[in-house]
Image 1 (cartoon, helix red, strand yellow):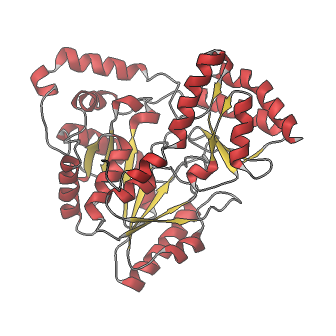
Image 2 (tube, helix red, strand yellow):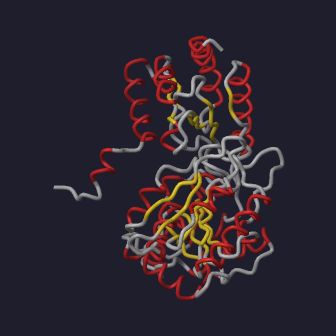
Image 3 (cartoon, one colour):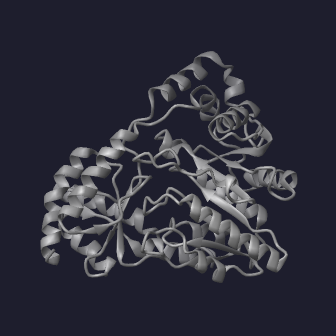
Length: 395
């Protein structure tokens, strides 16, 4: 009954969600307090108080028919202006509301942009490890995802791997910084090197290759690390963003797509992406949270809570003998399986009610991902279980 395109998606149901459901099963058996679930990147830090106040103010002060009605498929003009003004203040840019499309989160933004540019058989390149859904998003529009293998030395993108992966059918390169699952921030040096290779390949094939910078974790960076503004370094770059992490609003499904004027035929691309926002089924981003964003555009989450979790979990696991790169951003720890077998590592962890996601799900076998956007108390309570895991591996 279901389509051929959906069958592999059903068969390969996301390991992240599957582990989340396993957590619910174990909690029913052993009690929620005895299950240490690091599977899902669901923020545990409350939304800033400014967000609640903004929502209340919209409901109390704005006309309900206007707030609950249709608007341009690109979103309210004043919401887009508020976003553009915020970006311009922060990055010294000159974007206008016409450069922005409000979307149902970053996932929707990626989808509408891919729908805008891809023809069947076109290729998109990304770097392992990468967010598991990128392959599904590309296949939605009959594209082909080309994956550059992971550079496990420092998890910066493999530049020579990119050079080998790009072909005459390459339409886009997706990058994600700070990265899910590693927490690594792509450096300015890396971005310059990416631009050099992309420009080289554009000249070789006579094509335009768009960099899609997926940035839902931009505001979550630690130790004074600065996340470079990608369009400053890559000539043909669009940015997709979500407030799911920066304002702890994953369920509100609000984000945006930025298409700068530096994109060739930018006006036509923006028009097509706006139509894609409609025909993909979203029609427009949710109206209430769009109105609220105008009033709380510069609010921020409590990053120190995530930093405390990062320090506790990273320090605890390193002390027990586990290997992992210290994350510079986001709220994930990418831990090396002691014997190189991530599937076995997941099973061993599960024996002690610790839930982690296999690196194979991110095209990087041999590692597991831990989401530390959980309570600090849960991390503390999980460390004895990790000690037992370490002992089982002889660390």
